[in-house]
Image 1 (tube, rainbow, N blue to C red):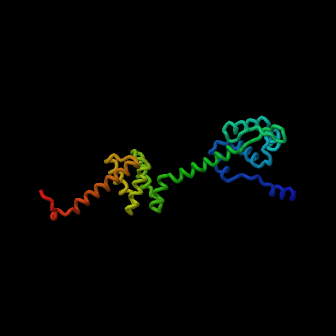
Image 2: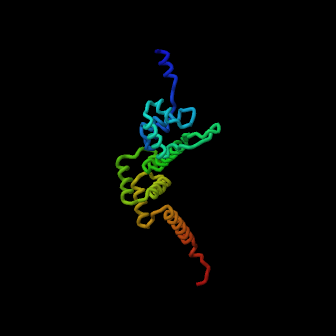
Length: 213
């Protein structure tokens, strides 16, 4: 008995953490997940439904249904491959790995683009419940998230980390009809041009103007 227990301990099926944590997101059922683990750990990719049935103690029609479902979900592909001049059906697991990669990429993008996370990073502290509510209200009244983040950048550039100041920026932009990043850039250029003209006007030496009237 002890030898059997030790043997069982030494035999391990491998499953990646990424697959374990994301298979539900891919709409893979628990039964399909067991089949996938089995397939991943097989030394050969030849499709043998009878062998799967025997090993997993499933009825043959159950195996066929599960494999067909995974194929329809584009989790696996059943392909034909020539091995030793004999055509065999094989299971290609590449679609599974591609879907996991896309899922992880989407999750990463979602995390990095979360507006509340961006505010907390800029403020270098957690947001208060009131601050969450204010940001949520900006979004509810129709402020574009990209525009809110630009207002945040404007505030932190001026070393001001409070939502009241950002609210004023958004209010002023709304009055001017600023709704996009391009509008913000255009407004900045106009402000610089006006500032430059005003400086030239202020610096002009009117008293020493020698031009004839």
